[in-house]
Image (tube, rainbow, N blue to C red; front, side, top):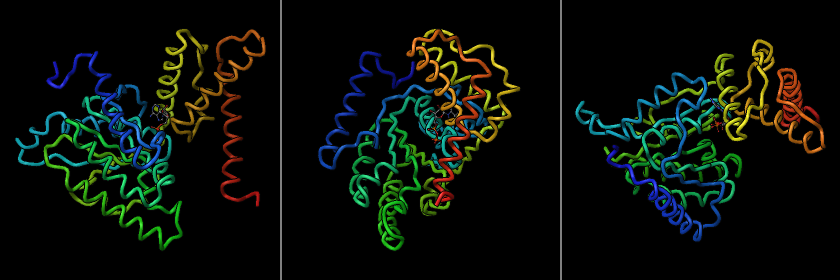
Length: 314
Ligand code: ADP
């Protein structure tokens, strides 16, 4: 048995203690709901992540830095402090970070930096060190800096002020990462879909110096992701929800879709069913044809959103 394993009944007590500690910080600064989440030993296996073979293999490897850092000592080196996951939105970066915490039986601190900076602005510079200090006190921790590009503060301030405030923030964060003791079973994972907005000092040697690409899924990975999300919905419902699906028809129109988009298409197909059942219709399981319609509908909405975003209607 893992030396760090707790009797199941005590797991909830640890979770409660972690949340109480976070609540104390929230009393001082303001509500952290949706901005910081702490989970004691999250449950997410690498097998629940579709595609991403190389990224999964890298992160599995880094689990040793958390579970058995002494192995690094035996080979005359210190464990790495952390990694940067980069790739388009919705490709599974958060899932990977969570799965790392899960296999390493670590506490998972999820810092949603876009939401944190949007609420607290440059004051995140006061709040961040307090959260990180809490995190490093745990016996084994994964600190996940989600949407790390938000530290540039470009979304909040005009460029000169953003640069100045962001430099201060990055300096504070870098100091915190540098102060993580070697062999201390703390691992930092940062994620971004915008490498251009990541301060190079964050990925300097000795900091988050391993870069791991998290690309959009190819058709085979898309099928895997589809099936994983389908199984998840069916398990939640406790019954089959889909007919035998024809992926030769489904995959071509899904070209370029991220995992999050595939999940959204599935959710919409199921939502349509729930609504029709609500209207008193007798509805069967989801068919290939219905999914094709949802994919088409999703694509059209996506195009409209992008057109608005890029100002083509102005
Ligand atoms: P990111 O952090 O890269 O923006 P997430 O990890 O938050 O993306 O993914 C959002 C959701 O999309 C997940 O909860 C999952 O349902 C789905 N998803 C994305 N990528 C994958 C994947 N590779 N395998 C399985 N599901 C995925």
